[in-house]
Length: 98
Image 1 (cartoon, one colour):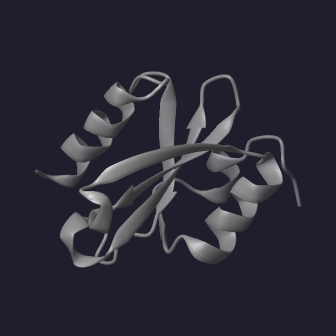
Image 2 (cartoon, one colour):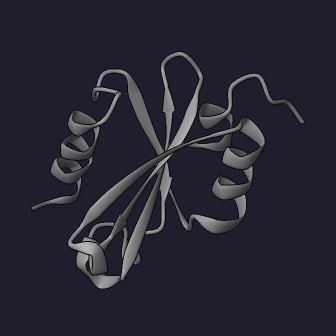
């Protein structure tokens, strides 16, 4: 399964549909191969401004865990822990100025 299809599959199984959330960043090692790590984490922003992560644990048979997070947690994940950003910081976090 290719990366965009997997993201759509994740969103379709969650509270948010693909038209209701945007992938901001993730930690997939090469940016596309989901099979290269034991787990992968994806950071999303819903259209209502809420942030959440989806973590896929390969050792648990691909179990997906959805976790609502705060804006501060989202910024920290985006900036420090998720190496592949899909959108710019200002697009990911509108209203945060420097």
